[in-house]
Image (cartoon, rainbow, N blue to C red):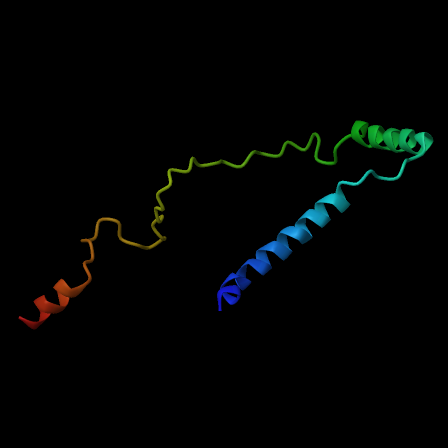
Length: 99
C-alpha cells in the first residue's frame, strides 16, 4: 500500500526526464556551415533589408489607440436613449410587482 501512494511521482519524474533529454538534444552543437554559404546568406539578407518596403510612401494613417483603463465600458448603441431612466432588475422588481 505504501508504494502505491508514491506511484503518482512516476509521471512528473518521466516528464522531467523527457524534458532533460529534449533540452540536451536541442542544445547540441549544430553542424559546421561553410563560410561561403554563410557569407552568401548574409548578403541576401542585407540586400532584402536595403530594398524599399512595399508600404513605404503610401501615407497610411495610424490607428487611434485608446488607453486601457482596466474597466470594461460599453459604448451606447445607435438608437439607444441615453437620457432614459436606468433599468433595474433583480428580486426587488419581482416583489414590487406583487404588491
